[in-house]
Length: 165
Image (tube, rainbow, N blue to C red):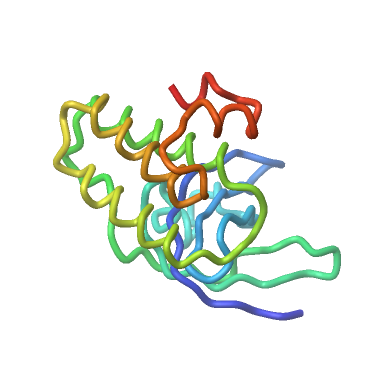
């Protein structure tokens, strides 16, 4: 069983089974990955606080025989959202995360995309007027993906134009 270490942003979490969670991470070394954290919903779970959405974490992943990735260690480096976030900021972070999850396909290292997503989440900490910032985020995102700033072309190829608006 191989192990990997990388920095990651927690984009989303989903409860699975009785005490486990499925996490959607964007990692510096592997791009978008889905990983399982076993027993993290238990009261005394040591990983739970580190794996909150919108945290920048250092994580160690282990690949099992079936190809599934499991979290063995996670340490929170910083909360990108901040502790005194307003409802507007939480909404903005959620929309940014949802957009990234929809747009990114598969595990692929992309240093430019990592830098862009991380810096965008850090910049968003002080943003209250979210529509303009969110549009700039989406525009920058699709430029890095190779669509320029043409939302119509990106929507045509990605079959989800409503998501871009």
